[in-house]
Image 1 (cartoon, rainbow, N blue to C red):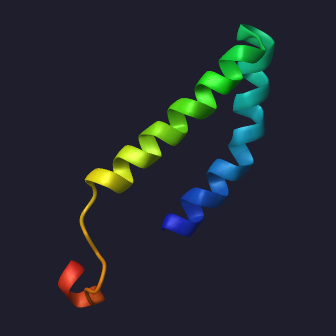
Image 2 (image 1 turned 90 degrees about the horizontal axis):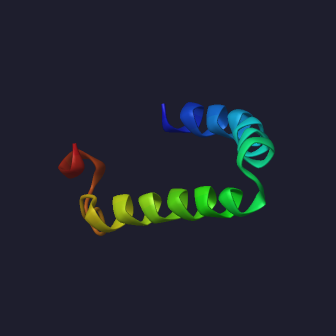
Length: 59
């Protein structure tokens, strides 16, 4: 599931970036990318700890 979502987002990303660039200019592309990185960092930081745990323990 995660792999499929990642592939799908890789297909959509150029269209989203070009839409933001043509509609809202170049600076907003950097703001969008920064927001995506911040949300990803927060998801990793506040997500469940999985180090040194087996898959059965996580599920």
